[in-house]
Image (cartoon, rainbow, N blue to C red):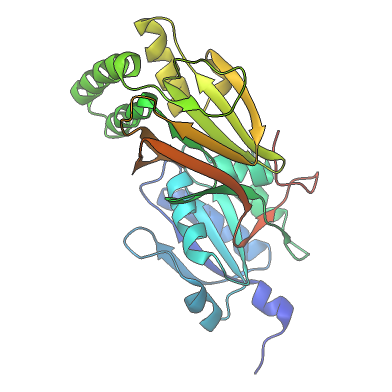
Length: 294
């Protein structure tokens, strides 16, 4: 029997990642219960990364209308990238440490509350602005410069390896101070000597660029931790404006450190980032009806 359009819209595949910060079995069970209570039918649960994120042809063939992703920013990035071009919608649920895209789409609320908002009506779809680069899409932001080495410190923190944490933190402080700085080309008001880290964050009215610096080695430690926690406004920085395109350059000609959505990439001496709409519909539940948290 052919299924109604609304029936298809309520059929869900759920992607979750046990390695994400808030994604244990109890939390996953809570999300599953919330989806059922909101009137959805869960056809399949995908354990990423042991199972790959589903692609459009798989979702289409299965008659799925909603792909729910319960994981951290890395899991969300993989799932949204894999689903690009699909006619259904992706529901991003906070199941990691930072949950930057979930906060942009829903506010800072837990996953079950977000799902409960979807009961009784069709999900509201948006295609928020994201970042286009030669490395692929960036949903939450880019960090470029020697400050990207703090990703190694974060991994040591995740592994609860104290000796490795101390060693990588010392290395990160030194490299942040002495590594090749990055400049934002064609932007007035930036420091000529460049920055230890430049962040690029997507908003619906442009890519927001900020340059982060520190005046002492002690400052680098606090600033590095702030950058990893995405508390960008907590540290000393220069606001470099919002733009349709951001060109970052390492004047020394060396490869720049690069994180996209918190994941490391091999940066070149020059990288260009542009604004574009997301290539698949995302569900938003923000009261304002906008998917651009300010």
